[in-house]
Length: 108
Image (cartoon, rainbow, N blue to C red; front, side, top):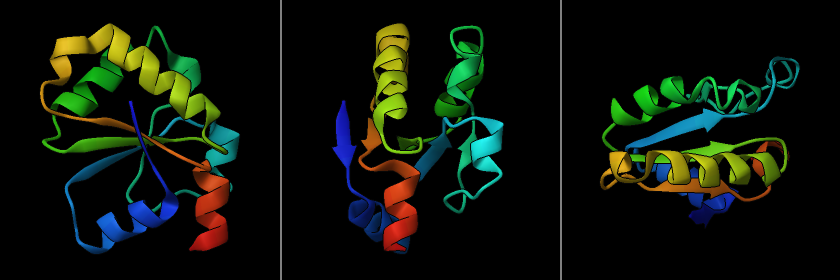
């Protein structure tokens, strides 16, 4: 699993790179703010919600950056998805955003 910083993410967004942002925080956290363009798929929906994650990732032709509040939960989700989806990911990268939403909010 790869990682990226909030600076890396900002640069990719500014270049209009094809990335799928997935916010794995819970509803009450998302209500406090999100990174623009992110899809919300809460970590608590796994493993039952694995199909929702798979469909979102499969429907998108770029890398997938996952984030949570500080980076720990999104790392767990990325590792779980890599393990469960394996070859279904094809050429897509699952990337964990270091520092998560807290770091994003602080630097953007």
